[in-house]
Image 1 (tube, rainbow, N blue to C red):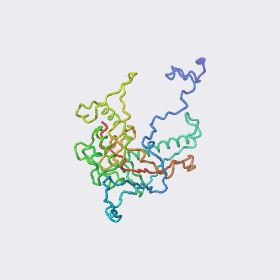
Image 2 (cartoon, rainbow, N blue to C red):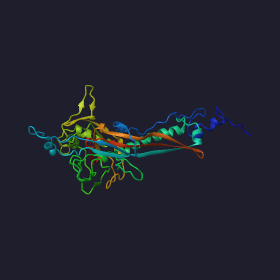
Image 3 (cartoon, helix red, strand yellow):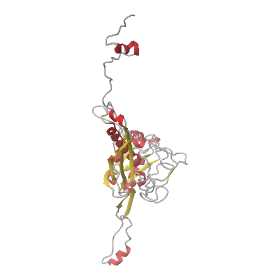
Image 4 (cartoon, one colour):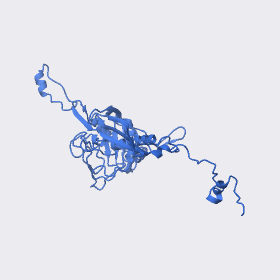
Amino acid sequence: MAATSFATGGPKAAARSSSATGNAVNVSEREDLANFISMISRDETPFLSSIGKTKATAVFHEWQTDELSPPASSSVAEGVSYATQNAAQTAEPFRTRLGNYTQINSKTVTVTGTKRAVDQAGVADEYAYQLKKRGTELRRDVEFDLVHGWKNSNGSGTRTFGGYQAWINYSAASTTPATAFNVSSATYVAPTNPGGGTCGTFSTATSAATVSLTLSQIDAAMQAIYENGGKATKLMISPANRRVFSAKAQSAGSSSSNAGDGNVRRNIDNDGKLRQSVEIYMSDFGDIMVVPNYVMGISNAAPITNLTNAANFSAFVYDPMWFSYASLRPLQEVDLGQLGDSIIGQIVEEGTLECRNPKGCGLIFGLSGA
């Protein structure tokens, strides 16, 4: 019987030689897998991070707003009696009681005993890793409902808070919003009252269902907010609308499609760098910071009646000081113990959106993102 001839390193090395497997990996070498895991998803919450935080103490969180009487002449005759003056004074109907239902947000975690016991690259404890991951996902889900879920305030069944769109100010209590907010030739049915808790319906019956964002729309929204006593400081838009805004801001305003968009030029600094992005827009009614929000660019099927996709559909013009996220139960882990050979847990939190001044925010809707 002929002797078997092995390559250096013995039979295992021969079996892993290039002639046997198609690669030249030495069996003594460790698997080249980095001991970390890269999270490739964005975890920012631009709107939630921009607003304040407060405490809710009930399922229906309430607050009050008040405003001054409109400016008018207050002249009176010399020696006028209190009774005469008081009779001419109208009652103050401006104090308003507003509220929003809290919404329970939750994620679950299930990890087998084997998964926790094995030595995994990049993970010291699979259960702890999954808890952290689900917690990050939950914060993004809250952001989604605040800005892109078109949520109605609802206190029955599965409670939901009214998102940003439920608190938009309309100057008239009619079914058609103020011109400043109705930038599309289609019709958006307004909430029945300021911050009425419903997001309305959008009709695409007309030929032009969506339009491209323009600077004049932003100016009109800021003017309406200013005339109602507010002052917007942020413009929040999807990434696609962010590019549209920069392009319009950099345009010369000579073409018909960009008419009314100003006469802004690109800035080339001393180092020769060409600046395309516009981060601060100086309008007639104050400076406004332009903030992209990737959540607003996500496809969202049928968020409101008659609309099949809300991706890039709207832009927010607001002042963060008038908004807060009211927490009834802060984000916490609930350890549910063992379920057979698995450990189970839950991430849960409960809160709602507080809008202290519906007149201090606006919505530009019906946008195409192009």
